[in-house]
Picture 1 (cartoon, rainbow, N blue to C red):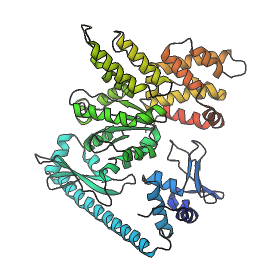
Picture 2: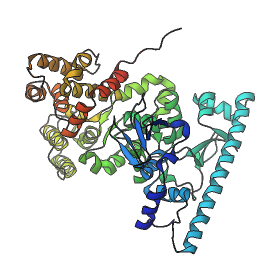
Picture 3: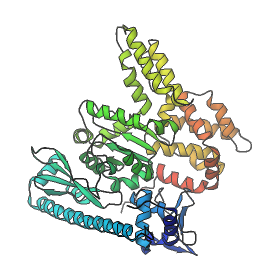
Picture 4: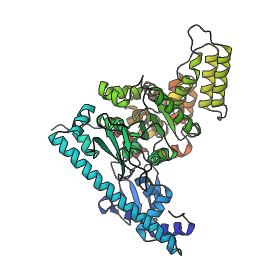
Length: 515
């Protein structure tokens, strides 16, 4: 592929029209512009403006916007270079202007990619037809699906197939294009999993299994549930956990993480297998993510599977409630990692050798000392001090629990607290919401009392003063809601009604009428 030059970029931005990236059925005329549903938030009333004049999209509810290049990146999971080259191809821009040979190489590579795409699509159809036949008439593939608890409906919606004694799982890119296959043995064949060979379309470290199916849910919730294997993903989606994805093993590449971030992932739930390999992989992933986790903008929690259990086995034995229990008890990444580092100090007889104490102290200090002052560093320092003084391994700091953001419901309840504080006109309806999180519920009660005392309706400063005298978990919720940052406060005040409607939909949805 060609290197992106300023001249090429300018030509693409001039010629590529963002309206051409939508089907006519998606757009509704609104004066000189168009409107459609925004993919970046739960948008029941179309709020995304598509402007031919500015050649951009912008949502006035969630505040996000981009140009044609960014839109193609977001919707198809492409890199910047891939998006520019694709738009160049669509709009007739030469990627190597003045270099006929380079242009010919690019076009040849593109033809080869297209031929491979057509081949993969044909293979997917053939494999699926064979499995469909077995679902109707019986066969090894259908028997294997039944033994794993995977329904025919799931097999059809994921376009599963069967060939040469293996269940064939299409490996799709973020846009849904099949770029390869993962074959799962249905008997004693080795290896258990066999992926397509790497080629122009498929690179193992550049694909997230299930991302095309999970993208909408990840954008809506801001959370991705990362598991080890593709069958775990199938089981989770079938059980209703639609943010589940896998990286085809325990090694997660920077490109795979980038693909998840492009889909709006702000919180990563790590649910690798409960065996030693899975736990070690979890630790490696946390180390890899640590700079982003400490800097902010990304958070992570660990779902603790016991022994050698994987998510697939958990769903088979306990059903969706088993996964819900794991989600509810997810551990903040720092809490999980500190527990592993401090574990050598946990001896019932109190006889921890001095060398062990010193080694653990050095390891934990090397973890947090490079970090800037803040909640994470303070929490790590406190836990180390308590453990070294013989206080055992204390429970997770409430602030870490708050930062974990383990469920979409909790995040919505925290949004309700923010709206109550900063948009007085919404307080009557927000105050009537039935919050489920104990800390959020207690925080709303305290804030409601403050609102009765305020003469001008402003309670943010009072809330911060009050938080200092409350239990840590409640104080954390109130402090976070009272001071989310000036930009967010301004947005809440401008879009208070839209935010209120979104919260009402999320927290107290209207039940479907029963005929």
